[in-house]
Length: 200
Image 1: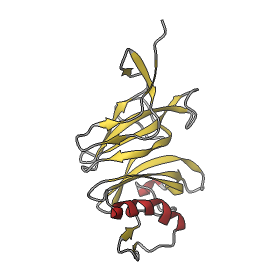
Image 2: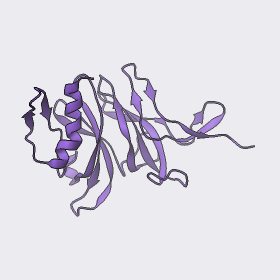
Image 3: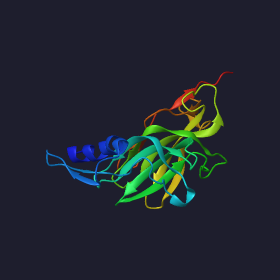
Image 4: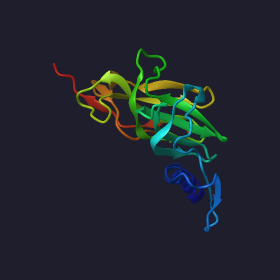
């Protein structure tokens, strides 16, 4: 990761919060900083009338300059209702997952928030943890049980990787995950597995 990429990613959170920088600004050190999105901008898909509000959570950046990030989301009444995960490819931002959306291949919906940061590889694939709508007494960050998911950037589809109740090593059961999920260029995913021993 180069300093140029770090600077570009930092602007997602720093520059957007200020909201006063131009889209392209040359810094004295010779690096160029590019705005990805501003607070108050519509969140994809724009027809939904939902926009970025509250804060940004920068994720990963790859060697092509693709960026993954999360933000709080609000509707036209200014009430924050959850979070969304997005990725920007060649200047175009895509929605990957959002509170209330159905989770593909399951009967579940995404819950109140993402477990930042997500990871992104050089192919633009994204691995991430996101709360589901399964109630939980033990996971207090979002009040529901989180799972791990992978977004395939070419197919533009999400698939579950780890869901609550999946079998874990040693005859145990996964209860979910926690913050920080990453993946490499071979597609291998590193995440936190929260599990419990079976009592008998």
